[in-house]
Picture (cartoon, helix red, strand yellow):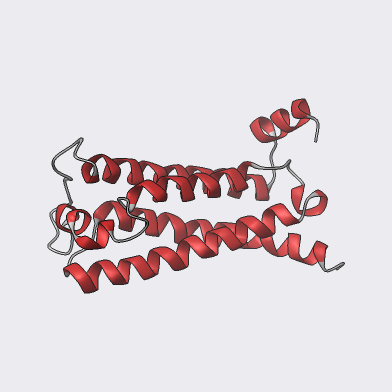
Length: 166
């Protein structure tokens, strides 16, 4: 697509799919922000993660535990930043009518939001099983993932129907 046209469509275009994509981008940026905050704690830049006053949350405990460092020999919030960035990139890729013109993009976005949702649910279960507490920031990202999946489904189905010739 012509970059000028893409710029105009993404910034000024109005349709239901694009509105949902903008929400997915915003929710993905919320996931990035959660990952950034936890990363600052997990790498010693900040010393405390404040939580809402609910007993279920203890972000310091969860994010300092073995659970937070057992994958890829790195704090788990750093890859979280990358994965939500990829989701935002998939939501931002293509013009207003990409389900008809580039159907793989909305399908890929749908698959990625499903992956994000399943991953955050699994990680939340692990958080609880290993720590008997949850990281508030991670759970915010989980809610963002679930909402993004719900928002991605309509356009992903359009793209899938286009790919199947329907």
